[in-house]
Amino acid sequence: MLRFSVLLLAGCLLASQSQANDTLQHRKSAAIMPDADNAGLKLPTGFSALKVAENVGRARHLVVNSQGDVYVKLSGKVGDKGILVMRDLNNDGRTEEITGFGNYGGTGIAIHNGYLYASSDEEVFRYKLNAKGAVETPYQPEKIITGLINRRQHESKSITLDKNGNIYVNIGAYSNSCQVKDRQPGSLGMNPCPILDSAGGIWQFKSDVLNQTYGNGVRFATGLRNVVGLDWNNQTNSLYVTQHGRDQLNSLFPQFYDTTTNANLPAETMYEMKQGDNAGWPYVYYDPFQNKKMLAPEYGGDGKTEGSAAYKNPAMAFPAHMAPNALLFYTGSMFPEKYKNGAFIAFHGSWNRAPLPQEGYYVAFVPFENGKPTGKWEIFANGFAGVDVITSTRAAQHRPCGLAQGPDGSLYVSDDNKGTIYRILFNGN
Amino acid sequence: MRSIKQYACLGGFCLGMFFLLCSTTGMAQSASLKSSIEKGKTVYVQRCMVCHQQDGGGVPHLNPPLDGASAVKGKDKSKLISILLKGMSDRVEIDGEYYSNNMASHADLSDQQIADVLNYIRNNWSNKVPTPVTPAEVKSVRAKTK
Image 1 (tube, rainbow over the protein chains, first blue to last red):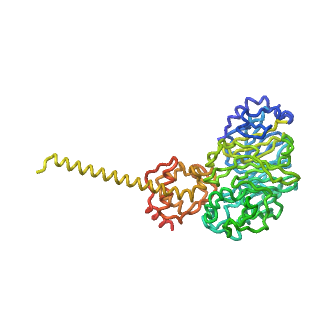
Image 2: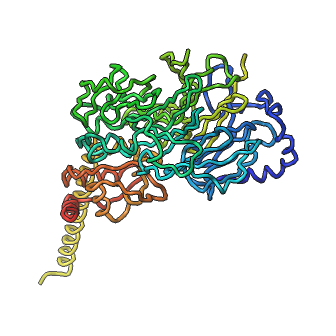
Image 3: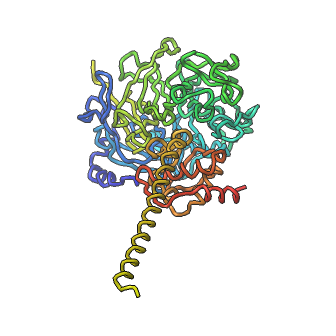
């Protein structure tokens, strides 16, 4: 349950509310004291961190408005609230007041052109924001998209918006690899994969038209198994997505793969997707050691045979199974220059590497130069799991899931395991 | 005429034999359960561990835990056998949580292998269920499943 005890504290702090409503000058991060232990995180030199709030629920994606209020989309509702509004009333950088609305669980949340957008696992809603960035009619949202497929697996509907009035929605494939029998050892792939008609890709809709569904939208990009992290890159004016690669190569096709190859294959991938692009799921997977798109074993592959070259190449490849759950292009000015226009990725952490130790559970940074990734990446914030070696997913205490940039340029990270909201600051020189 | 002492002796002998027989049967049973659990571990590693993890903890919101799970520890062995035979793809609440991933059917395993892996998960981690699952029970559920 949500700890509404913070509301009691909020009552004590009402006196400072008028101050909180002042301009951003009062919210200068210089005045914010990080936690003594940097919220338990390991960060590059000059960075520090604090816990904005804890135990808020299963915090999926989040967004920060111009006033520094944090909107968090919860996967499971807390009471009747699926969206939390977290306010810092005394400019200490932390949350003193939590209210909420939105009677649905989900993942996606975004702010664009004066509206807050949020998704359930089947629909997308929007709420008008007033001049202070607040939702004035939380119980009368506009339903802009409805009827999207949710068959349990890969059900999150992540969203991002471009500069031309479009919203992009991930519709994950309700399958691991489009087998006739999902996750059944030896079961072959359906050909063509019928899932791709309504899922396994990114759909584009208008951001201001009500009650759109498949017939009104465009299948913008396909062949993407499940994209939880996606962001519009305003520098390149294009869509970037991070894909969760397929699971269980060795348990489904033990004649071709062993536990070690399964732990390392396939890569988690980031793509720049233009309209009409196809990343190749379920027919191919990306092998980061051979730098090749390999034919999936469900479609005749054996770990050695390449798939069609026609499918899109990833812009970046990452270790297998780490589950990139959020992508954010950093446009702030708080962090050093190297971070500007680069990509942060929140890796939720793996489960599919057993019996080898699990990996991920951190926020990575991908530097970009001239609108292209440099080819390198680094761990930016680690220590969320609270343990060094994770042999079972449940051992991880916190799991990074969402990313947001504050108006001051600080980076917010949500954890959907224990519901901690982190804020990372740069105060070095 | 035999003395009372002789009868007592005979009675004592019979009683002793009875207990010996009982304890031998008991030992035999626990030894067979122990062997089944050991064989079940091999099946678990090959088929189950990737999703349910080494510690039976599952993956939050994706794959349900087996450690501590009421259906695993429960008396309804038929239901458990049936899950292995048929797999599971329904949206059902499991001990208060929902899970996203589908479970495949493992009907290609033998009656003995299914009994073994169930004995393993029912007697590993915090689970301790002395009542074994037998291949005959698996056979019986399999016959009704078709």
